[in-house]
Image 1 (cartoon, rainbow, N blue to C red):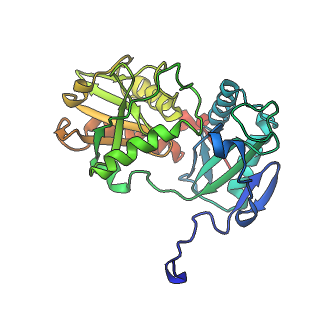
Image 2: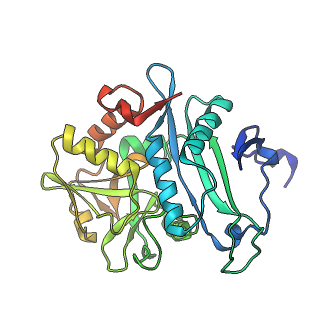
Length: 315
């Protein structure tokens, strides 16, 4: 590749927190024989920081994200060499030192190379890194307004005893990558995945909600990642929008005849779905419930709703 066409990394010039100290992006080194690189054992989080209406940055539900990465590591039996308060402090410092008003934050816990390679190693050389960068709407600004086109993937979500789905683990996302590649190659925006019994599970990186008959359905936690945006919007819909939310199995054909379908996640926020498998959903564009929820969600993360200020860590 010629120099004129070289693509600059979105992380260039930033500082990472790595194993207890700050390093420049260019100096954040990981061994090519990292156990996690070869076998995929690791845990991570995606966290958003928003510029609030007061002009101050605020991290959304930071404590809950930290709890989840520790839960993930506990499930995967990865010892974390830092206390929660140390990771919380490091995340805040990463945002501050890089002078972000808004950003996406990525803590990752992974295994180094001191234990050698092989499926089983006796002693884990646990490493922790935290990076941050500006990342706009995951599926595009237009997607938030008009909704996306989705397709059910041929790749099934892991069975509950094939992979520990309550953990947000690095290797698990190969499944999501394959599903996303499949549907994007066919001209769609996002993949919807079924579980091994054929019921709707989640999208490649988001939880899914269905509005029909005056109430909301979403797959139960026994089959999906416990999304932090998911739990937030359930609370908003039930307590502020007067909607009944049922956590129960959803069939593929329920999606087709729903009044609305929308996705939630830290990256995707609240994204309406206007079409699934070439079938128009509801009115064929972003629906009333999704747009109202989206408005309330952005008001909360931007510091405009005093009832939910407990969800914000101001910097």
